[in-house]
Amino acid sequence: MLIPAHLLEADTLTRLIEDFVTREGTDNGDETPLETRVLRVRRALDKNEAVIVFDPESQQCQLALKRDVPREWLDALKDLQDS
Image (cartoon, rainbow, N blue to C red; front, side):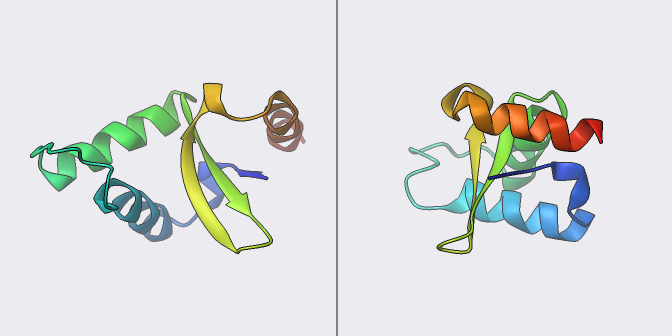
């Protein structure tokens, strides 16, 4: 299930992004400052290039590139945003 970023409180979204960009394996030796990595993800969310994926079974959130999620999830998100 996809969660529209604008539905999250600003602080919650920031913590989600920070968790994502600091996970082991996400930096691949990248020494870019945390603030810059957070800003990049925020921009990707704002430009609809990335989405927030929530798994109700595990109660976990992930960030993913839009191109990597099933089309029906994107359609459901669009319907939610349009209503």
